[in-house]
Length: 159
Image (tube, rainbow, N blue to C red):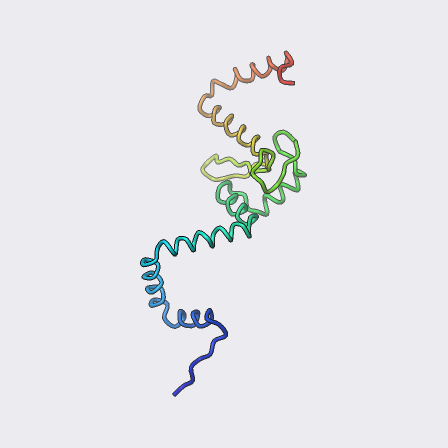
């Protein structure tokens, strides 16, 4: 009779058991999760919250890549190139928070492909998005807006 294998931990024992019969382990896991759904969901939420708290930059980078198409390396290079200044107004930006002066990745989607443009303040990026949407929907609006801003500038209302 062969000797029972000794494992350094319960984790190693579980890994060996899974490797020996993955279908059986998956079925057992699925049955346990179905029977203890709320407990599993609470555990999943706690794990996710702990991971988010421990990895804020990875979370932001993943979100930025998914939402704007900017990989972390491209964002870091653009930040360095722009010296931490907003690409629209030229004022200094903060990094890593959700305040009005924080730097966010500006992008556009000409053909459904997210293309990086520049790093802007959150407020500058929001304003730019509204203006672009307005111009796309109402092409006739460009000339009156330009005339109005010129009028305000000549009369000192923009200073």
